Image (cartoon, rainbow over all chains, first blue to last red; front, side, top):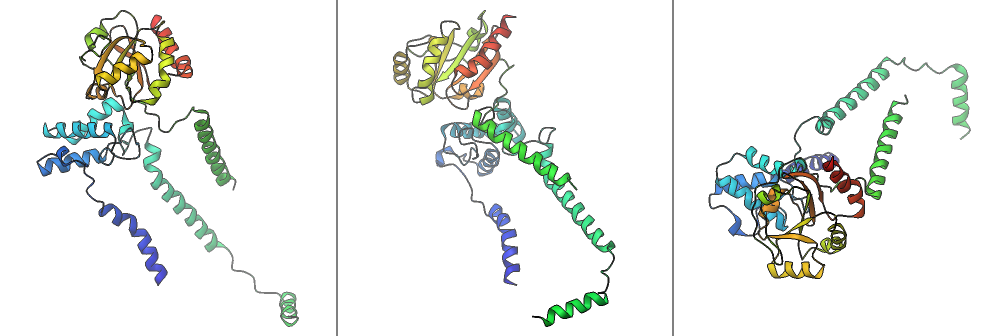
Length: 158
Length: 176
């Protein structure tokens, strides 16, 4: 029972981590937009953009100078009323798709995106084949007289 | 029956190829492939940085021979290492410098100390122009074709290796 609970916990931990992720905002309040809705939008956009200096952090998380400049640019564009797509497009135009933490679905990234489905399908097929083979196997023959006698001998000799 | 082994072997070989590529420098997962090559130089007009003369997109586009635009900063250590390479290159190819996020005094000191390879020198103190160019860090260099098209680009210092494999072929390409 405890094991089951542990398993459940391990399975759900990443989900809860995602849900309870703190507001990642910027270190300096002066950077933030005064309109909370616009600021929230700027943060969602920034969270999708890679800091090109630290590379594994978004520009919202990063303390690099360039990330701060890019955050400011995102906020200027948000204030100008541009859509999320327009702003990310502005960044991609300058830095390429590398700046997107979530790569777009295209020919290059197709394998990356469909890999979970592919793995599930392959695993499903493998287990289905295994299950079918086992079901179609003839049940084992009962022991012959010679085998039974040898088994008795072995048990007695212990 | 052998199929799973084949898949595992293929995965192993590709992983090995990736690691050895990282070892020799042919594959760098941190490499930033900005799409600037083949683009026009973005619109900008930068003030001069002593001891040079500033320039704009228009001045750059009006040149009748290839120009190498080099973003640098006095606080950037790879730039110090690159300075020698630039000095050697400067006799064959005009180099125009842009000081990135630097104070005028520091940039001037750096340029004077490292033997100024720049024919023109502009200052991008805010770093906003650099973002329009797709600069992610200094040093970064762009080969500009007459007319203002970005012919070639490298994020990181110019080295004998990337001059031989990238810059020279790009210049040859322009002469044709």
